[in-house]
Image 1 (cartoon, rainbow, N blue to C red):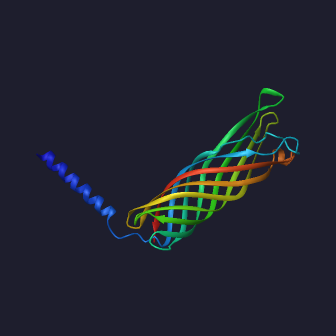
Image 2 (image 1 turned 180 degrees about the vertical axis):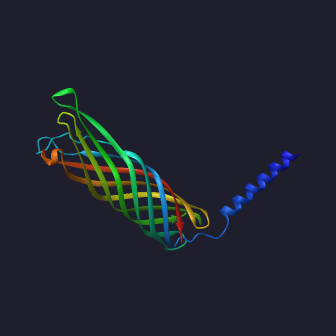
Length: 231
């Protein structure tokens, strides 16, 4: 009997807590917001330099940097009517996303001559947003705009006993889609997919550019989840 009474008490408590979470005033989707995100990033850093054009082809392999990320974001949304909104925002993300590729000497395929590492370190984005309210608590949206990322590329050559690394900021564009769910008062949970094309960047090659420059092409995908607080 006591067990049955306890189960009823737990059930009533859960129902009460659920009602307190999902009830209450409607969230105001018009106004400023701030948020935090965490997620996973994957992409590719391609060497586009053709052979015989004043550089050493192959010093940069087609690396696929991948790893975790954390970020912060802020912006302002404006309701056009009871279903549609537009907004402007910005975010900053820092990454632990990299990959190291090992290469062999073309004259001796048994000689592991060097390694090349691509790392995505930080990224800024400025975004425009268009959203649709499914109901009072669910927002679906698309966004897009300008992105600028800091990329570190590291070289190590065992034949010449040489190591070097270069950091470069690359401009590009970004586009994503996502959704927000208002689960408590003015707090919403968010999930988003984002694609970023950071274009082509000509960067110095190894040995302080002695062998010319390398044309690199970087693309990035990321999936994030986070919390947004609306004022």
